[in-house]
Image (spheres, rainbow, N blue to C red):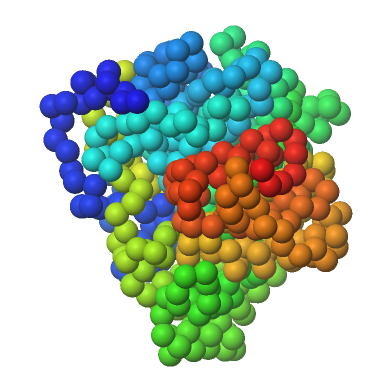
Length: 487
């Protein structure tokens, strides 16, 4: 159903046609995805100090996005420092919110807003192709979980303040601080004991493992009395189309470009050139290895720029890197920028800053430390072996973090379940009797490759399955503390 109240408020606002542009989660510099930030235009986000001394500033039940009667929502800011505020948008579960699990959703970038996940993927509403109106989403993830969409680090999306985060570890510390503020507010303290989940995508291959490991370590420190705080009841971690272990994953670009479920992305000559760039002495493989072996920030940054220039970008060819069934630039999912920067909307939800899909300055900070090329797989292994139910998933039409590389990363894992996992064959996955992908489960670890999905898995349909239907089935199974299975 149409969200008529919001539409009425936006009626006088100029509409930019959906085909005019689409969002790009990973910065694109001088023709290179994940390229040199010195070639990017400066960010347009205003950087100011935190607007209020109130630790948590909340607008309740705005009527925007979630229109299910009786379902609570809240949006606003939580301070993580005296000069930095993170934007959040929280939606109560549509069913049994008091006992339902609690999920935090994080988009990647680095520097991309989690409003992408909310409005384009699996939130209670989705933006339409006209880029100005919203529809009710029957496959929203808050069907089965309370869910909080968080713009982080400071400066991303609606968040604002003095941005000083340049590594996944620093970002994890700020998210922990935010959760302490959030869960100790009287409006949200009732969720402290609910099962907690991190779901993330893209650069979330770094964020998810790092944040989950940090939470587990902070919980342990609280338990042994070395710090004070509120434990976070972490039970689930999910990483979709993620960058976790570049050394394992970058050869996947060579494989996916030549052979995937749909069509090659480039000719053999281009693949040969990229293969040389990977294998030659001092090439991409050697550069990432040097980064892993105690490399400096400059060593890791140089590996990022060179590998993305010589391998990632040229092998995409003329196809949309987020969905190879479209030519570049793709027109879907539609861009929410104009809607999210409407002043009427800002007043309704309590937004205090101009929204932007990706903050280039945050991206620069991460590039400067070489965080992109550092290995997050040890953190992922630690989280899995700590008993956190974990799923890695990937859409088979996504190039930029494709299933060839992700499955190589999964095969390289060294966990309590890895030997069993690697001996298994893939099983066909059906949702409501419809073919939806393939999967493996071992212990509390699962992997699923989802048919027909691009980078933003929940934004796509497949066969007779509706948009987001397969993604909700996956989400629901994991959040019920079950492995992936066919229905």
